[in-house]
Image (cartoon, rainbow over all chains, first blue to last red; front, top):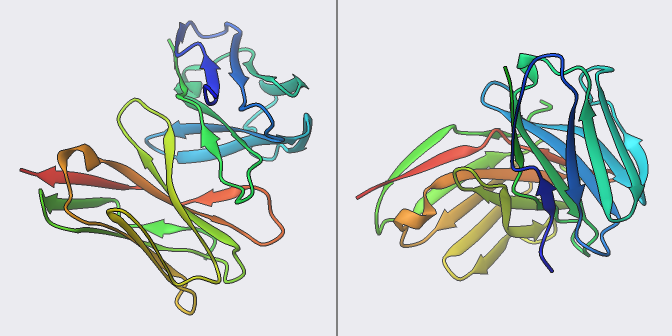
Length: 113
Length: 111
């Protein structure tokens, strides 16, 4: 298996633009997690899904953030409109193994100018 | 408290053992994990331990768990330059599906 796949790896955009981050979880995993990592706040859980259904979105910072999982092999995290303070590395992770371990993708480094 | 706590920094000489410590929050946590993050990369699962165990060894890695004190440690034997990274501990709380991560410990290897 290729592991968790994220795209793009790097995104540079201007304030006010819409940004869409993409994730393909490991096949067969039934949980998908979106995290954000910054120097100031560390690793934060934004939202997670179970069997494509959002379970807990309490970590989503504002209404500008939205996430979808239309099927078991694809999820998106959208920021509209983007702001400079959204600059961070965004990770997607999936789990479904016996020991609930999460497997992380390589991340998308987002820079909002 | 609510936070999983780790020291922010650790420096170790090449060839020595590294011991990274973590204090977690919930005595009913079922699994505890150690992740490694190299620069520019995602978090890589190193090892995990079930809460009814007190030790687990995997090659150069030894995990010790003290449930009474809610203390978890990761020992890396014969530390190499490739071990330079940030190490995160994480707990899976009973009845929960999400992990609670520590702040991470940045391990620096001194030649």
